[in-house]
Image 1 (cartoon, one colour):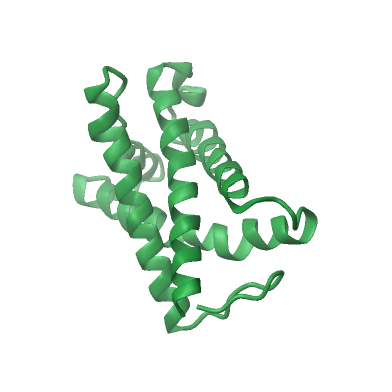
Image 2 (cartoon, helix red, strand yellow):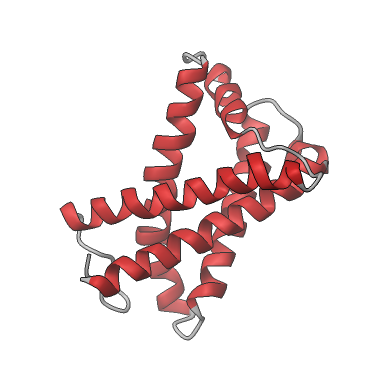
Length: 162
């Protein structure tokens, strides 16, 4: 996956492979934090599959456990969020704030994912806005920022290896 400073990468096998790898690594980090580390520390346990199931049910779509897992792990973790980084956020950031360090940029991207998922998707799914600002809200903030950082670092690592 080659990418010039302000251009988006070409949509080819290398880019799709990088998206799957970066999305996988970042999703594992997100789930490890939200479903293992956070509860071990006494904080809330994230339930992204439950949110996905609620959203699917809102639209009258199948919302069994398999559908929630498919949406969280595949559609969001491996496709939507990596596409958002590569083709929307990163190019805009490079155009308007080219000197911004990648770590800060990726943390801001993760924050945006949190706003989108916990502020927006929860409302569409019929849940409380930002989940009522309970403990799960803040665990989700850390998880989404972690996702953004891990995905960006993985993309950068893969790009430098080529």
